[in-house]
Amino acid sequence: NEPRFSQYLYFLFAPTLVYRDEYPRTKRVRWIVVISNFVEFGLSIFYLAFILGSLMLPVYQVFGTQYLDWKWFVKSIIKSSFSGICFLVTINYLLLHTWMNAWAEMLQFADRLFYKDWWNSTTYYTFFRTWNVVVHDWLYTYIYKDMYEIVPYNRVLSATIVFFISAIVHEYILAFAFGFFYPVIFILFITIGFPMFFIRKTFSNLFMWLSWSLGTGIIFSLHAIELYARQNCPPYPNYYLDLFIPRSWSCHEQFNS
Image 1 (cartoon, rainbow, N blue to C red):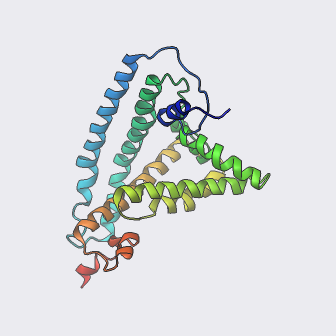
Image 2: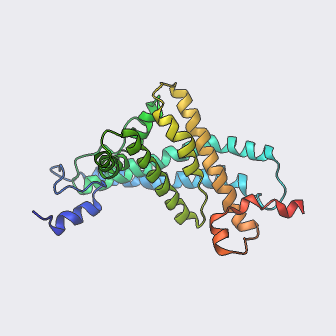
Image 3: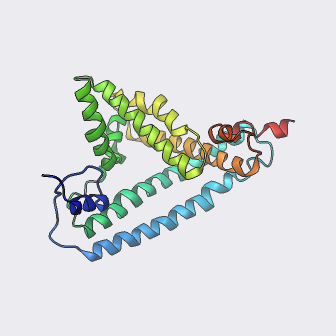
């Protein structure tokens, strides 16, 4: 039978990316759960604003206004590592816990497995499968399984396609949000995340947290530097060059000259 419009409409608002004609449903809506999740969502927004406004962005406001040596870049990345991981954990809690659970409760959506215990991961293989179950299920259902059927018994190729698509989508979202293209996440995904995914050797949980913190610090630092370079540094003469080539790469030339 063809799906009804009401089923499609429910899917558009349900906290899932995988379409089904029917989903497991709860018997009633617990409005106290809805309200508490939206309150936590609002508090998380304020906490994120505090991290950005007080701990992270002030470090980079000087970029493009004076000459900065390599020591400043190293110190900035280290400073951003701790606040960056706090920002990342809060984003995860805000989107995958409070927001998803609030809508799931309102829509009586019974499946609440939006993430698993990624914080206990000792391998990147486990981390990528538990960090965001909602997106992981979509990638597995619509990308990995289809590629596995096209190229049977080639899991490496299927996983590679999934990684590339995931990295491209992340970069598209950031480019749309910031208004410029800076493929930091794509490069880290392909050069570090992708090889580490296939290394099944168990690392310590402390190593995982340190790598997450450093990676987040690098990602945020480079994007924040480019954000202020867009404010303080002259643009490239060509629109497309200015869109795809970071201004921060040439910003210090004005001080050298």
